[in-house]
Length: 111
Image 1: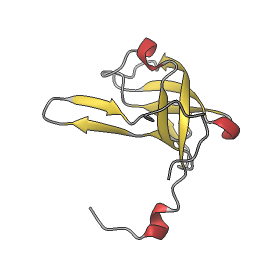
Image 2: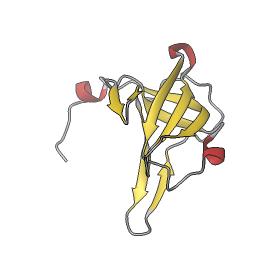
Image 3: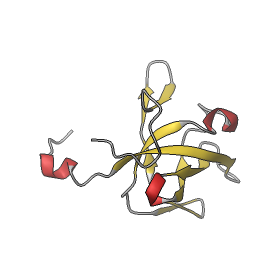
């Protein structure tokens, strides 16, 4: 990976968000539609390729970390307004969402 400057990191708006609802996306094997609460930034929709790792019931109410200032992108006809952070264990084909250790309010900035 290319080394970045601190000023590059400062461009990211990382926030705590709470998943309010998770829905299937018609015809998508990996994507799930998440409705998230990002505090003062409001509710947003993000599409994430985590369907094979988490059930919709597991996701509801979970606090996650999102890139809140990522330019919107259409995925399967849905405008995704951010991206969640996750780590993939390639050897064991497992994915883990990056979550706050403590109960932090949605919208809280991550630094």
